[in-house]
Image 1 (cartoon, rainbow, N blue to C red):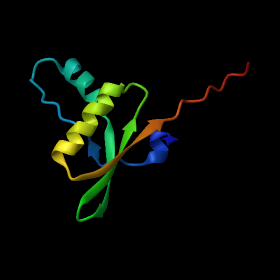
Image 2 (tube, rainbow, N blue to C red; image 1 turned 180 degrees about the horizontal axis):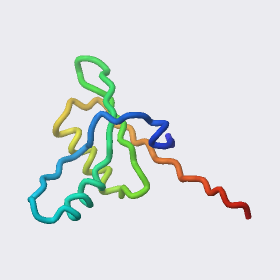
Image 3 (cartoon, rainbow, N blue to C red; image 1 turned 30 degrees about the horizontal axis):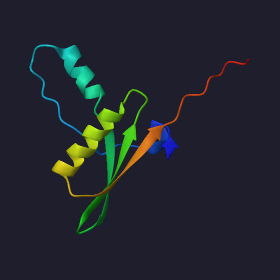
Image 4 (cartoon, rainbow, N blue to C red; image 1 turned 180 degrees about the vertical axis):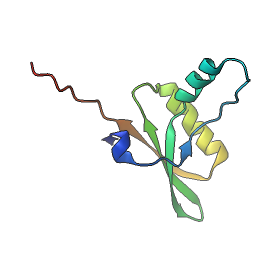
Length: 93
C-alpha cells in the first residue's frame, strides 16, 4: 500500500528507541529520523496488527529494525509496511 503521511493519519508511536547523551543534538536527531512511525490495531487477546510508515529516507534496515523493536516490545500479530507516495511535480514538461 502507498499513501501520503497526511492521508495515513496520526501515528500511535515510533518503532524504536534512542537515548540522548546530552552532547550531540544533531546526531541524536539523525538517529530519531531513521525510526519510523507506527499505528496499532488491536485484533484480539493474541495481540495487535501494526502498520509501519516507510518514508523516503527510511532504508530497508531501518524497517527491519523497527519490526524487530515492535516484536520485542509489543504483542504483534502482524506487521504491514505502508510506503510513502512520491510527491508529484507541478512543473510542466
